Image (cartoon, rainbow, N blue to C red):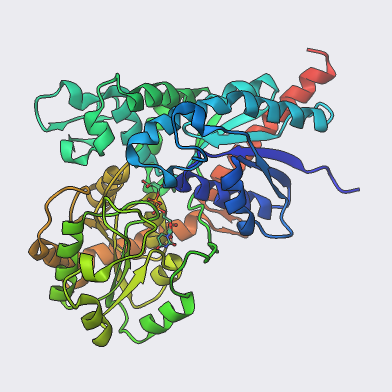
Length: 490
Ligand SMILES: O=c1ccn([C@@H]2O[C@H](COP(=O)(O)OP(=O)(O)O[C@H]3O[C@H](CO)[C@@H](O)[C@H](O)[C@H]3O)[C@@H](O)[C@H]2O)c(=O)[nH]1
């Protein structure tokens, strides 16, 4: 007789940077064939997700009602990707209204399963409030964050302590995370720079983030050997288990938004010598300013390197509008690059994983969103960092100061950049310089470390495999404990 599958309920925050790692985790858990997964989100997000769910999977998409208009948000707002920046905090606040609907989802689930609670409820770092609901029904609750430990630790500590508020200097340390050493005011995203404890971002995050400690444990999309300092912060801070289970990545991202096929990219890269191409992309939702874009283009032309650049409209324009090369790039730039076969401009979206795994790619100029970092390092590709928002500044700090696989080229969307400086840094990383060679060596070491972490062969289990086992064991233990108590009427 086949055993009843355990059920897992997942709820990410409604933003691409959160939904994508949750989907990757759901697909990974689904592969074990041991669980049925209920993936909860709002209607429009569920619609977008549907094509990414394989036909034979046991992932069930479930809509949760959400009406953004009552919070002063434009009607139909269900994802940060369609929101102007000044409304993101309102959206965060509005997400609290999911509480009663989520409670009903768990309650219905328990009823359908004849009184059995889900094996586990996994929710976003902004949804620590779910712990109370999961526990009410006897379910294990874990937080999952797609961020790395170090970056998330700095972000968490900064929002909770706002140390820059009482500091006259431009540099400061984090009171509960001294291991991060000094943070410079230019390493703060705009909303954090302006935060004073009374603004809506501070109010929301200062109440949401500490609720993570109510969970039974925290899952992070990182690797123990790479990220011990950040993991240590959360272990100390929460007193709960913290399981680094990464990299959890989407190996087969839906290509519907790609402007170029992986095959075309591969053919282009095949014509270039090994280790000669710079790949440039700023992730799924960040863009640089018009003047920065112009300097970057001039630097790319001046440095003489081959490159693939994912171009998007600069700051201030709708990210989904058509890219106007004639307006935002130096005159004739695209034609010259195309004619000389030096550079490939890809509009909006490129097959990043395929590009990074090609032997012609030498370095990745990136905003250092954590997925990009993991994808780059999984392929042994060093980074040229240009952090733009959120915890990206601290990802760069970790990669540059602690690990040695990154060189920061610029910081933020409004800083002044000069083409000469960009050229210098690109050459330093890509050429046979002492620095470049050391970064490549280190990046290869990190690639092997990551490969080892996810390996499960014969008797060897890598650290991420073990962490996943420990998480599932902890959830089982709670399940057994609850059964034992129920059997005895305790
Ligand atoms: O042309 C593109 C651009 C992006 N990607 C993919 O999109 C993802 C982008 O993820 P990431 O690099 O993490 O960037 P963001 O989308 O900006 O990520 C958000 O979420 C991350 C954690 O989940 C945080 O680290 C970031 O700060 C936050 O901005 C990656 O898997 C890329 O492979 C493509 O495939 N093609």
